[in-house]
Image 1: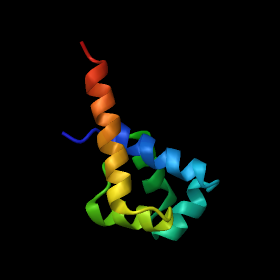
Image 2 (image 1 turned 120 degrees about the vertical axis):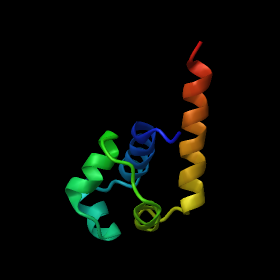
Image 3 (image 1 turned 90 degrees about the vertical axis):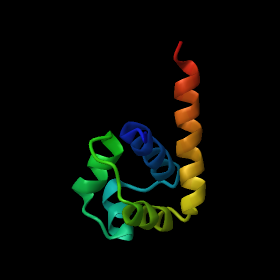
Length: 81
């Protein structure tokens, strides 16, 4: 199952690495800032369409974003006893 907190963590990491505020990224992705904030906090899972828009706005492929999400999920599961 996809962990919303990990999805948000990865998106937030990319956003900060690009030096973008939530306001700017949400504008570039054409979503509400509050929606982006909720995604980054793990309160909501983005739809495929929203994830794609965010990836375009971050200038990273959606597959690269998903690869990082998958890696974080593997790391989390390997940390569990």
